[in-house]
Image 1: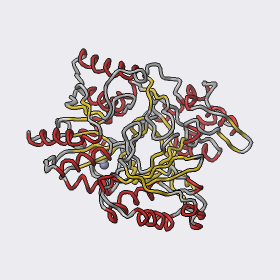
Image 2: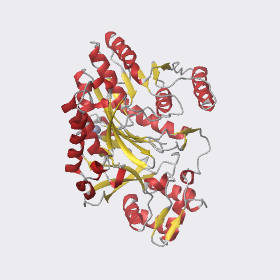
Image 3: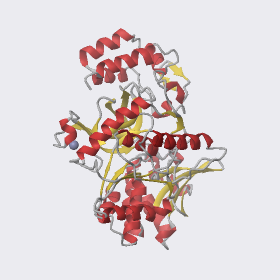
Length: 490
Ligand SMILES: [Zn+2]
């Protein structure tokens, strides 16, 4: 934390100015800024004020640009980019995997040992803050190409701790498409044994087998030491529902969620089983950004890690109605991050505040909190635009209240048919008989009342018969996340 400024300046010097292919270098040149200007600005006003000034000069990257989906366009300036243009050239040791991104093709991602070591430290703080260092630990996470499970397992054993069970949603099997990941997974497990930090043999448990995970948690509860388990929020909710349905006692379990918004509806299901759930804030391109607060003000209250990243916020208009959100803009400081981020929009927004919570993390100097984190990735069919939080309210509160079922039983799915976008509301067969026209009119009515685009008021979705109901299980993304909005690629 003490080396923040030096780390930032080194990254800008070596990773941007001395990196001929860096898109940031082109943007800084366009803004007429050389390295000594940045150095001066940071020494004078600090990192965050420098970043704000750079943003105003057009030195920022949107999510679509960062993923290589769109060229960078600024007044009088255009540059084609690929996702790999943002790779950190300072990294030497790495493993390539897919991020299991929620839409489109997976992006190459580097797993770096220095970064894992840095994150093992924040993981240690988390275990201490929640007093769970000696509790049995489990994972319900996919194997590579999903990286969250492997990284979480490695962080944990780095601390000399054991992972007792690793349930996975995908099979550990050798086939043509996944042989590299198969070799990587089995090599790591073999090596962990060689170095006497043994990882368990992963146990195949697809999402429908939540009961298997619940039974393990119940056994730990029975032994008097309820477990700590790392999984995605929707998978954790499925475990709690399975436990409740089969009258299994998993109370006292601590769920550590990641990968999806942790919402009040999900928290209610967890609390119903006498368990606790917390979540970190992280992204595939940079790892952990925030660690769960042990005295949270909101469900998703995290302590930001100032040694890893600098965050600023910019007002970003959503749609044409004049509504705006406080977009989070990310800059990596730690040299081991797989991507260099300099004012990169993540597609997320939230509240940053400095608050005295009194938890252990604060005593380590982590004073900045981030909470109420949501995605503004858009549902854009037929020019409509909704933020993630509006869709979440519909799926997790309104529809289950009126038509039965649980928050995980509904989902918006967008796909193209003959070039025309169609949006389906997936309703799990578990919900039973429903009045489909009534459900569609309720969704349209709700969206109309919260629509961020004026066009919707003309009822374009109704005229275009864009919306329909699909009875099937909700879709999982590559990383076994269930997102309120799922994009089916053709
Ligand atoms: Zn705290």
